[in-house]
Image 1 (cartoon, helix red, strand yellow):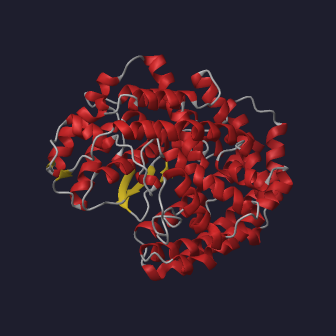
Image 2: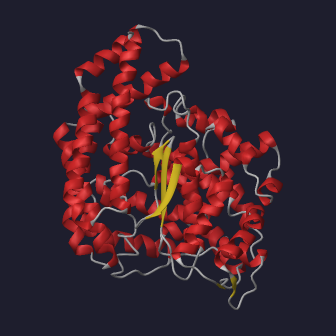
Image 3: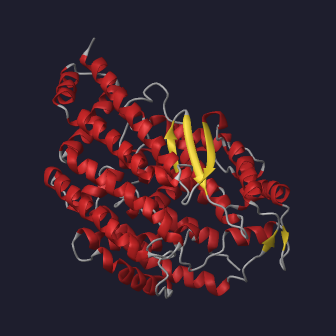
Length: 497
């Protein structure tokens, strides 16, 4: 057996352990009984410890070198070595006891957040979040020393290899320069909020979700949808899970959360089959993953063509009618594309959403630079909300700094990928129209095969064959920038009324 074959066998074990860990986390968020938390935290920490031990082992290092010595010529094998080497360098920079400690601290903090957010109880989570931040800083410093990165850059590199503040800052500065005035202009021309009524029970909303997911390409024989405190997706090629949450008086929030997560899921279900149990067969970083969810949610599903297709399905599923507002395509479109300075990131429109991400980015940088303590997060959060949105939060923590699960789950460095994903989605959509022509009539007819086929060919089926930034440039012809996104929102909202 060749060294490459031995290496693939060892990497297959890592894949299976990560698979098990992922679904223990899914179960924890969806259906685990409350008192199962401590045991679940121990189980997850053990699995993460085992993965870390295998990746950092001398045996794996020797197998990687032996596989390189065999001088593989297959592009998938070459890329597989590149990806696992990057993971091994990162893993060997962090001691096993820190991996276990951070895993347990994050599990405990996330479980406490689920309980305390509903109670608006910030003080109770401060000690647990402080532990997560302290251990994350320790990990970031260890990674930074080995990689010769700034500690925060070391965290960004985890969610999108090669990403750093030097790349992010000019893009975010451009968005901050453009968006506030653009939003002001839209708000001066935007009419009153559209109101609808109907049967918005969770059961009816779930049925609507399934009726929209299937035509988009979601394979229910390889996936499912459930509810959780915070919408998310996880899974692999043949076992993909998404979750949402339901509101009693509004169906659009949940509907678009489902469409967003469906974009993630379609990426997972479109990954290459042959190396699906190898690092090269996994999805790229979270910037690309978020681009696929936003390609679906924002580029396709907030457009009029999709709404023509979806409107009769919504009517039938929810018995929707106007509530002081006519129920027709025009009012539905206005409701879907309403611009509003709001408190909640996941409920925000595509023109204000990037500003929510910039807020979190600034706080994360301050935490990692020891310019901000966990106790001071609400103060900085509230000031940035006032500056960016004109909103006074006071002691409304649940709709402020407690609204997202990420920090409480230890996911520091993830947030920038959302807005970078929006920029990527706009640039990819432009490239798709260039490649296959105007596709709006397809969407109006409920036909998504051509758009999904383009995504499968250009992005999904390539796994990690080439790095994200190289992929964007090869598909679109340009490095990632802001102009496609600015062109998109200007075209969509420039005629708001």
